[in-house]
Image (cartoon, rainbow, N blue to C red; front, side, top):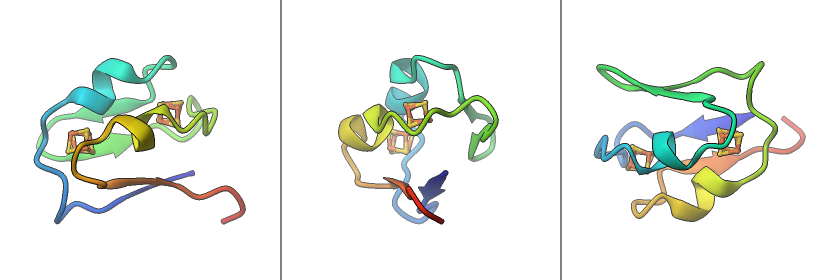
Length: 58
Ligand code: SF4
Ligand code: SF4
């Protein structure tokens, strides 16, 4: 699963663009569609604000 720190997220949309599974949606706030996410870690890698964290056993 992906943990989002909404206080750090500035809604730039980079993670939404980079996600190969279209598992992220940005409306009023960023959301993860967990059933689409493969925990590949790209969003965590590309977020310039360290707002995303892949949680592998939680
Ligand atoms: S890349 Fe980071 S700051 Fe930008 S929308 Fe995604 S989580 Fe938020
Ligand atoms: S871990 Fe990968 S599949 Fe999941 S939301 Fe991030 S970029 Fe998308």
